[in-house]
Image (cartoon, rainbow, N blue to C red; front, side, top):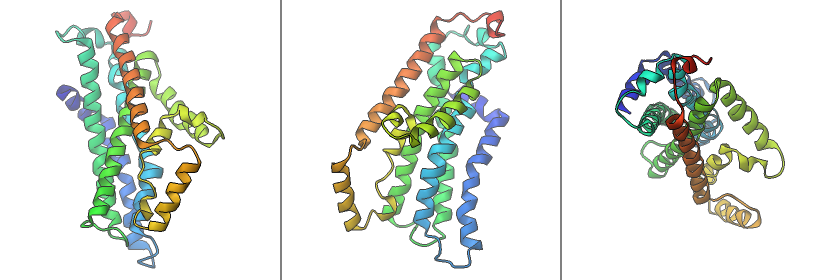
Length: 264
């Protein structure tokens, strides 16, 4: 894992991914310094909106495609995997170690970006760096980011092992199928990772201190079927386990020769 972290950080895509992930920090800063009315944009609304509309559904899958999809596929494409697998370590440890390295790198990028976005949103109203409730909200979204990166990363590793163009298939699945499934009426959205990631969002994050809204939310949840946070965590863990175990089994039983690595 430590070796893989070093390799990932030396890649050009690491700098590109970091730049893209830090771009949302400019949004609350622009609102703070360019808005004519200092109280026109609330900090908590801006922060929650960025986390739930940008960080989790867009940037988390993007980091998975940037890093996790190429954990195995890159060595196959460059024909170096036969030499890598001759090391005296189990193939399962090699795959799992690289996955842990991906989590370390991607969570560091996304977590720091979310924290910086939180600090930038604190320049607006109704969000404070010293308010314990606001800091708990920040920690909650970082944990959700970890869950999203884990599930999306496992899927990306699976695509990298079983397909020759994992990024292409990943874009179609994560930005095509998921977006379509989330707007189709019915239960199709239960076949997406995004459904369970959204179930981990804090309920009414911008109105958590309003008693009337919390009461209405409880009544609403009793009237319709809502995926609980516990069930969402279990499903995400199962998804991660299935994709990772499938990838490990494929790498353990597949013979990688020079010709096979070249794709012939």
